[in-house]
Length: 225
Length: 207
Image (cartoon, rainbow over all chains, first blue to last red; front, side, top):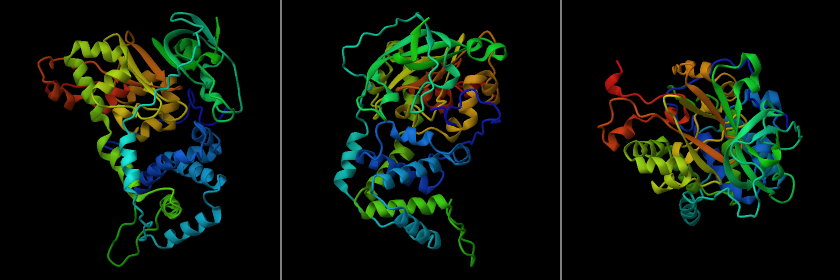
């Protein structure tokens, strides 16, 4: 979707604010929320890439004025409620309890077997490569043009590269097409390429000197140029 | 941060998000959907174990070992796995070589995709609107704000992580470190140099 998340090329955000030696989590709640997101993923509260799509749907004003993990909190609680794991009433009530009792902590329930499973699973690698018989249409060096598509669903083709001329720079193999996964059935595996664009092609006369951009694209984003 | 205690004053009211997350955690614990020790374990893993030191070791090895460097540039995920670092989620890691003529830098304009297996979780600035919006538009200017000035003759390549490939920069080895041990080199490699917003400095050569 042409959402607020699709930020490449926007102006007006000012300097990048750099925090020296910043902690991984700025508050205890961020770490707990990150942990929650990892644990509940396998209850399928989100389809694959569904969390990204949910983040993209956040109201633009809320998106821009919330922190990264505040956005996660929004979509995670929403998904849990939608899937029937929680009620909004219970969540509101419990939030109020912790608001008036800031010293209180959540109850503890340990699950040593789950912990062991998690530790063992952490280093396992799931390759995005799909073992399907799909021939890549393009080769390194081929001139291509990215399509001007504007789907309302989830897409990984940013606005700033749509309808632009580039060249195939790398071939990455066949991966599930992310655009189709949250909403449609089937994973639609397709060849994925890094496509090189010259800065001047994307930004015109105001482009900086000697700049190129490499954007990863599934084959259905591209046509031969 | 949670409230500061100051004598008889009441603690500061906790941020809404902190109360909300505690509420979420407590309800999920009660429903048996999450476990406390697993949450502890996840936080610990990302605060202590999985971080840029992984990537620094990969870079240092590539600097001292040309065969490893070749493998790293050809098949990043596998070469990184040789060092014991594996990317859990479905992603491949491609390593980009910085040279005197080509400077690579990585961004995810759409969200926050990052090679966490070698760098840990991304810093706030990498996920910020300013970085995501501007790095593809005016990389030299943004790099200049980071303190990295590049001559116009150096090609700047910006990699937008839009799919399931994650990118890590192999920075140039700083001059005067050819005789350094691999362990000493690990200490020099910063997270920022592996994203591409900084060079690796030889501390002996900086004032």
